[in-house]
Image 1 (cartoon, rainbow, N blue to C red):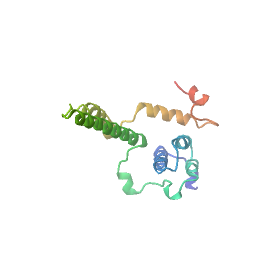
Image 2: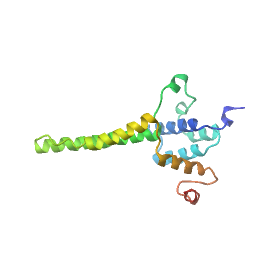
Image 3: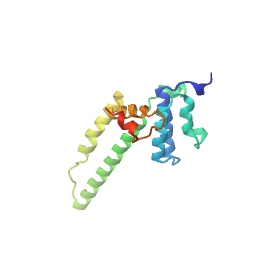
Image 4: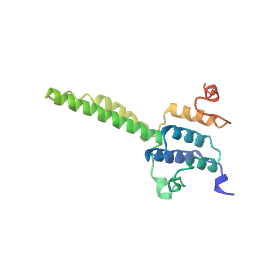
Length: 164
């Protein structure tokens, strides 16, 4: 039996979606196209169905089974990388505003960015270290999987009817 016809596992789906994230980062996919392809990957039953979502993308980038060295290293999921990126961006903007205010007033302003960066970063760090996933993310994944029926898309009546 070909590996293409084997049923796909959740970790394999996650690797395929992570690979799509890399294609978005490289500018090969738009966010809308990423959403459509990721939904199809989560709805796929076989490896072949998931690999179809890489049509038109470089073959060298399509995900393969991880090597033994890659399995031992823990990687952040796509949504955790996005959360950390947002945290770093918001933190940088807050520090920049604080520096500009301090320069404009020619005195060192109270370091208020620590109250934005600190607690938020502590929550993200705790969730990352303990492997706690967002409940809203798990809820969204259940809805994406429910789209595996014919013609299911985001925002379709079939998606709305699965809420609850």
